[in-house]
Image 1 (tube, one colour):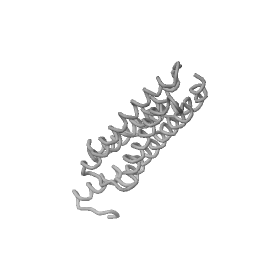
Image 2 (image 1 turned 135 degrees about the horizontal axis):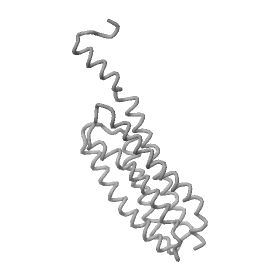
Image 3 (image 1 turned 120 degrees about the vertical axis):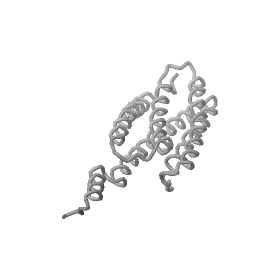
Image 4 (image 1 turned 135 degrees about the vertical axis):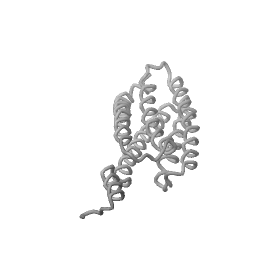
Length: 189
């Protein structure tokens, strides 16, 4: 189908980026897991897992649109289903953010973990409904939703890294504080 063929390069780039970033997210989480102080599974479920899910959905959407469909409505059914599942998942994430008590989310967290992912999944769902009549415009909606998920994932992954590196104390500092507490010495003595 001509409309889908015109999007090949876009989804090759987005799909490759999403795939690479999924791998990088696993590397980052492995490195962070080596830190002695853990904030808990509830925080990971609310903030880390959705980031990987958004990368995976961008990757999946890139694959769905690259399938040689006979008509755009078949692809639209798939991305509409992904959008509906994403809407439900967004509600689950917001609920997890509210229930966890290890970290108090700020506006930026609500925006990038709740509002923008929900918007992306709503765009996907709406685009699916209009694909039969407005295929060209619907494909722009899918592209926007997919790219938004990729950028949300990039932001959230970076936010996780900077929080763990610059906000939580480093293992060396924690060890030094623990040592000075047990032997009665202070820095510089």
